[in-house]
Length: 156
Image 1 (cartoon, helix red, strand yellow):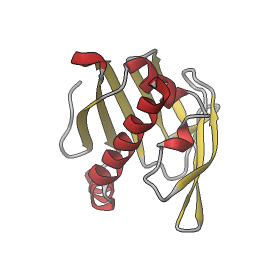
Image 2 (cartoon, rainbow, N blue to C red):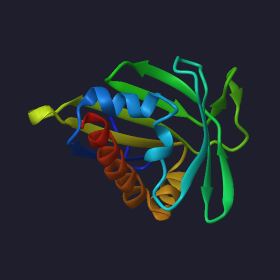
Image 3 (tube, rainbow, N blue to C red):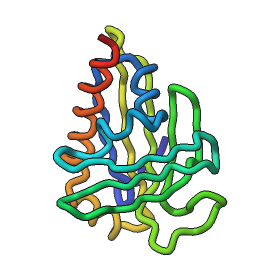
Image 4 (tube, rainbow, N blue to C red):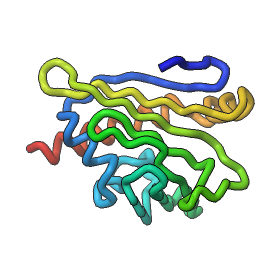
């Protein structure tokens, strides 16, 4: 996948949990609240319709404020690739102020872990910079750490 440094942010990390479990965590609503936003923030609602055009809606609480995030899946390749965006909501209704498209790539890592790549693709260099300044690397890194710990607990 060709990345554009002006509009794309990404990182890759090896997670010490099987790819099957990482996939389940990202695609089953019961798991999302355990890792999706950096603690102490929390997810209060999740709706998933795991298919192209299906909804991926979350509500999370950040410092007492509820934040609604509605989106759709653009690509679903079981246990390999998950692409979702807030540019549209279910039924392909355009969002008034889209922020990004997320791309998650999963592959097997040596020792039974998962090679985990998270990409945030933005509409403009300005929105990419805003996301970077908001703490993309720290925030998404924290989410990856929380995901790993939670998935390892499922494997036990």
